[in-house]
Image (cartoon, rainbow, N blue to C red; front, side):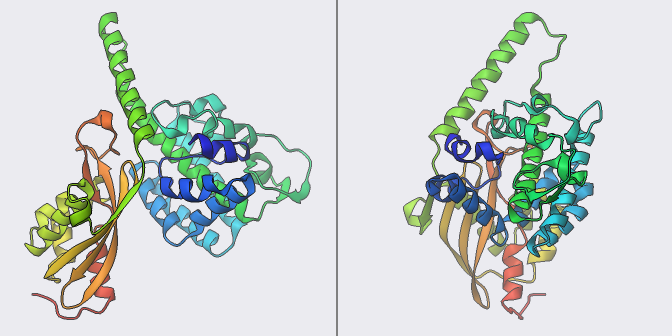
Length: 362
């Protein structure tokens, strides 16, 4: 994270916790210069599927959900190269989101940098959201047609900065949106952990001490953790919990244990009446056998598994997994036991259907 901000902090890019750590380390930080690092980060955001996945994950914040139809249109504009339209929608959605989250109600444009200080998240870094507010709220009172490459919300929304239709500004708008969502999640966690003011002083001090221990535990885990990947994980790393979860999901599919399959779906993306929904998606496709070909542990609480499925046809599918607490929060060591759960839970059945499997069970 420090290397990221050393290159891109002055350009007001934000390190949010849904960024791919592998991409940051192997592409952005290794780029060497700020220009190359910025280009590499933009390239990662523009790769097929990355923005769509990040956008789906924002559903975890209730205040984002009513804004998703407009955010999806902003994504369509961005992918079609209509960067001006995408930027304007994203700026408006950020204002409304912060307005709904904070009391007194004020949009993001009316906030001080200190309003975005949180300690239990990457987003609380001194060069994160708080630092970006300086340019976000900077006033522009004279019309300019000079090229703009920063997210100057004031000048863009008020029509004084006219030359902002470019991929850098539009991608920074997405980056800032995910930072705001990250801040909202960290803020909610901070509210839950805030001690009751009516507690005795001794109890308060003990609780604060426990919180400091938990934070130190999480920071140590984040510092020590490194990404890894294993081909043929059944032999190279058979005890990895992500491999075990993927294997359990496929075994449950073979046994038609839809209740167990539903239990292995991420709570953030779990449908209502989950067992019924999983049964409806999978009961037409018998899984004869499978092999977990590769496991990629790319972030502390996120990873991928590549699985070969043998039904009436053979196909490969790449599955996104996240580690959650029993309550559905993103897992950290201080939050106790974690469980790997599948994000795009319909993907294996959908893949078989798309590949042309026609023989269905009744």
